[in-house]
Length: 478
Image (cartoon, rainbow, N blue to C red; front, top):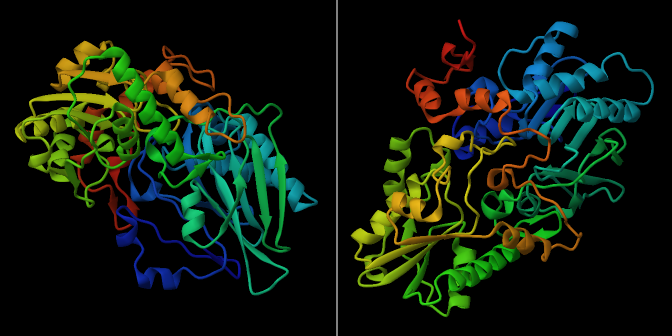
């Protein structure tokens, strides 16, 4: 937060409720601030790389960033060797901070034009996905979204006791705007910069890229976003209903003589799709798994053994819903297959006669390089396998995946803004920023982010030492 030109910061590893307790919030004084939660898809899970990140010159600038920059090696070389700025971590967010700060340095004249000029350089320099905010101490907030709009960003506002002023908020999802009592204004456009000037309480906007081409990440609608979110003018809940209906039609097409007795969602994200699939199939919808809400998302946990153990801790079966029945399990997606394999086994142990599995997403065959932890093809269960081979690996009788065109249409037909293109790279292998699956970048990504590398780092000791950087997090070769 910023208060009378003094910045106050609190960050650490852990859940929000544990890191930010009442006495911490009291110390975070001021009427402007940045907050961020993350799991690392670049760099490490070190406390030192937790955001916001800060540089003192010029003004004092902080950044919070959602996404993943892909040309980090090139940018690091320029920042260190040409600009002689110090980069102390492997975080791509630190690069984003330094590029903006560099181009804010030495400028004269109107601060509004300085901000937009600096952001033009950011957009032209960086490749990948990057939506986020800069806090410029004593000046204001700068919200931005990359030229493809891969990661979401919305703007909200609310009235204040002073009728001439309004409060403003940026967030990755509209639910955060709703929860804080703000009114959703709109999505930040691809390639757009929104500058909230805290000195005048005025909002200035400009598209700062010469050729923005919107292609939001389709996986946000499948998995990451809450169902009550509105993203790019699209109700996530409505898209998931349509995903479920398309799934049901695909099941009837591939298995017209199916003997499904009951449809059971794998909580929580798949619940909406499962409900509509059950309705379209004319089969009862039942809750068969009860979720322990204190266990996090398993597909992002390091190591197969840890993921497998946590599936059993995360879910428990209602055995009466499985016993003696042919069960259709509906999941939002199948990534490595560890979770699906355990869940199918749990269904059989609960007495299911046959277990069928369907996914609201198409087969994930390629790494995601835009901020989702799907880093290497070899760890994906759909890599170089067809549906029959995948079903055998998981242990189900058969598996049906969503068709990619049906997935795209479930979003397009829900859009009031005429959405055309999406980033579907983890399904199609086509990357909107131009990367090729055979590029050296993917080899480097695999080396840093595969299960073995993450497990090795996690077994070497704590990720931070009372806020000081641990040697465990230095990934550079000796």
